[in-house]
Image 1 (cartoon, helix red, strand yellow):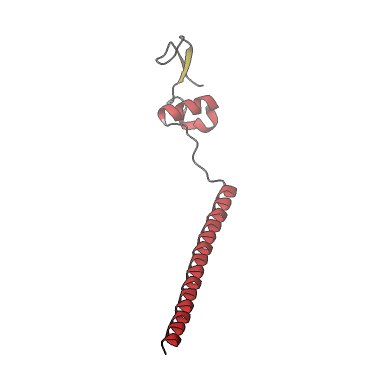
Image 2 (spheres, helix red, strand yellow):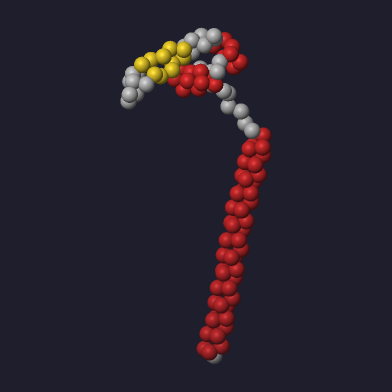
Amino acid sequence: EEEVVVVDGAAGDDGGDSVLQFNCDAGYDRWRKGWSRKKKDYCCSHEDKGCQPFRLNPVSVFFGFITTIMVFAMIVFAVWVCVRQTKEKLLTIKQEQAKDKERCCSCAY
């Protein structure tokens, strides 16, 4: 029960080829089971009717969650490594300064 309109030489066509256009109001109350894939595609892209609702795939959600957790863990680990290295460098600098101070003080007397 699809109403199809065939338009010859529609704007944008290069050789007068026929273009299928659908009446997206016809049968809209039962578009899920009553419309062909072509009509759903046409009406969704031209009139925003007959579009499939967005559904989340549970597997994709799970892997997205795992990926997010892994990225977060890597960032936390990288920050921890940077903080630890900075502390070690500061400790080394303090130890070297203390040695330099001891040498300086022992030479002065």
